[in-house]
Length: 212
Length: 79
Ligand SMILES: [Zn+2]
Image (cartoon, rainbow over all chains, first blue to last red; front, side, top):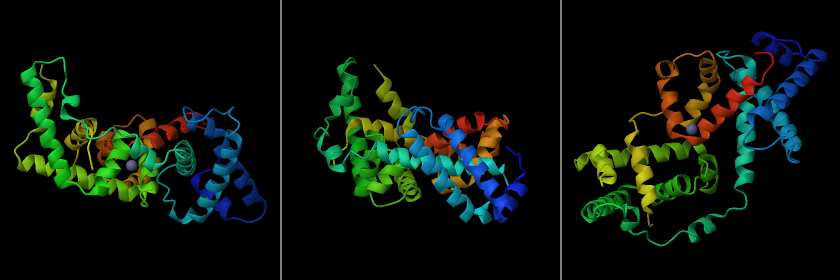
């Protein structure tokens, strides 16, 4: 394949006729040939779904590249920018299919009821330390309930407990990933400020959990 | 809503690392191509892009994308 500079990529993709066709074909090839490595640990290239996924990602990537050519600022290699677009497409698709059979209801239903603070306290430690630990948990739980919105609690639950990707959690909550990150950041900040107001030092809290 | 204790602990870890100003996923996405090239050149990204670096600690989605991107670049015979 012809090795192009950033400028050549842009001008070939903007050209018409054969230059354009060849550039599109090359673009498709580099995406398709890079995907097995990119998606290693996600999906095997031998899996029956792989080819379809690769083809779809390549198509979508090309469309996005062409429609966003103006936004490429040339601060990286053009192909790195293309890879970035392809990776986002591919992982979005894989996250969705990985979680497609999991309903929000099932996540909420399978949860054990109100967890007792004793569960978190380490039972192998001194009873007095155990009491300290469960008192601390109660205090933290109280703060979270007071500081965070239902939505923040829900998002946190999906992401922290169920290990749901942010993108997927956002989709389920009718939001989008960037907004959800901001919502979570706000939640973390609220708790940080609350802990500070209460004069609670995180180092001390962790020390309580680590003492024997 | 009930809150399992495991969440409280995990939350505290995240709270401990929380900064007043953080990049969002969109901010990081804009810089991600530049970021991975710095990583591959062995540059000190914690100095050059501290906010991106911090976001990657907090956000599993962006971290996964950076990892995939680095693998993709490593497999590129033209690099
Ligand atoms: Zn992110």
